[in-house]
Image 1 (cartoon, rainbow, N blue to C red):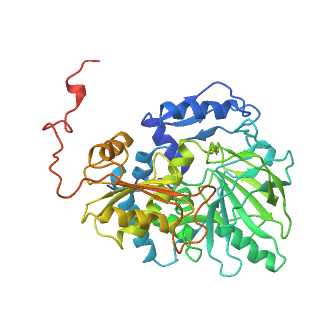
Image 2 (tube, rainbow, N blue to C red):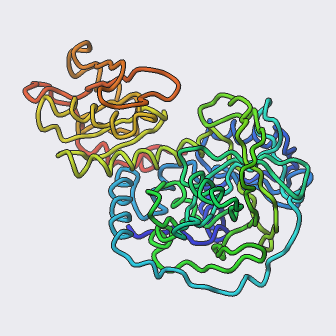
Image 3 (tube, rainbow, N blue to C red):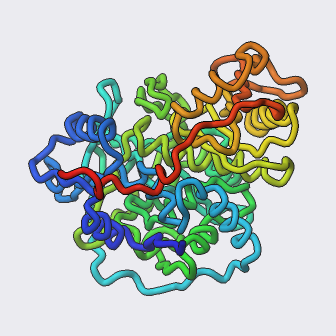
Length: 447
C-alpha cells in the first residue's frame, strides 16, 4: 500500500470530507468549553475528524481529531492498521540511509496574510484551565550548537497580549536542551510554532528521534520527497510552505514564569508550573482560508498520536533483539503495552515483559504479551486470551522496582506484567467458522 500522506492539510481535509470521514459543525460554537465539549462527546461515539466552521470571535475554522484514528494514521504512511509498526520501521530505516539534501527552498506563498495572535481562536479546553491554550502547535527550532532541526509539542498559554505567550517545555525534551544551550550564551532561542502543520511534519514531531537526528528530514521521508520550505520574516528559520498558521517567536533566556493549571494528557489537572518559558511573538501569518488545529489533551486524538509514537519505539527496540516480535500497541491505555509474539519458549513472554519495562521505565507500567492469533487492538480478545489460556496466578508478574534501573516510576510505583499466551504443549484449539472473515454482511441483510 502506497502512502497517501498529503503534504498539505488543505488537501487532506478535502479528502476526508469527500470520503465522509469528517463531521461538519455549521452552527456557531463558543471557544470557551463548548467546542471542547463537542470534541469530547463526539470522540466517544466516533473516530471521525471534526470541522467547526463558525467559532465565536474568530475568522478561523477549527479542525479536531484529525489524528484520532489508528486506521487513518496507518493509511497516512501507506500501511494497514496491523502493519503500522512494520511500516514505520521501514520509514526509519529509509530515513537513516538518506542524505540531508531534502529541502526545496521556495518563495513564501502568495496568499500569506499577517495578523495578530488575538485573531486566532482562543479555546479554553477544560473547566480549571488557567487560560485559553494552543495545544496542537508544532515547535520548530534549530540546535544552537549543531544546527539540527527539532520538531516537538509544547502547550502555549494565551494571555490577552499579542506580544507574548507562556509555554511549558518538559525537561527531557530536546527543545529544553536547545533552550539550555542558548541560555548558556545568554541568548534567546528562535522558534516557529506551526498550527495546522503538514501531516508529514506532525507525524515526524510525534516520532521523537534522538537529539542528533533531523526530524524535518524524517518528515521529508514520510512525504516521499523534498519539503518545500520558505524563510521566516523576523527569525532565521525555514518553515514548511504548506503550514496553515506560523507564529514566529523567541524564547527569553534565563526567565521563568507560571502557567497552569491545565488539563493534561493523563486526564488530570497539572499543578501550576513555575518553570514556564516566555515567548516573545515576532510575527503571526497564515494562509488564505487557513484551518486552526485544536487538540483536546487526553482525548482520542492526543492518546492515539502518543500510542503510535510510544508503541513504535517499543517495537523498534524489541524487534532486533528478540525473535518472534509481531506487533505492538499502547492502545487503548497509555502506560500499558500489548505485545503480539510468535512464542518461542515458555520463558519468551517473561523476557519480553522485562525488556519492555526497561526500554522506557517512565512510560511503561503494564505489559501484556499475547499469541499471534490475538487481535491486539481488540481489548476483549486480549483479556479473553489471558483468562482462558492458563493459570491466572502463575502468568501474572508484579515488580516493585526494576533492579539496576534508576528512576523507574513516573508518579506511581510498581509494574504489572501479564503473560496471556498459551502453553506450547497446550491442547486447546480455537474454534472457527470457514469464511466468517470474508463475508460482507451487506450482501445478506437488507437496510
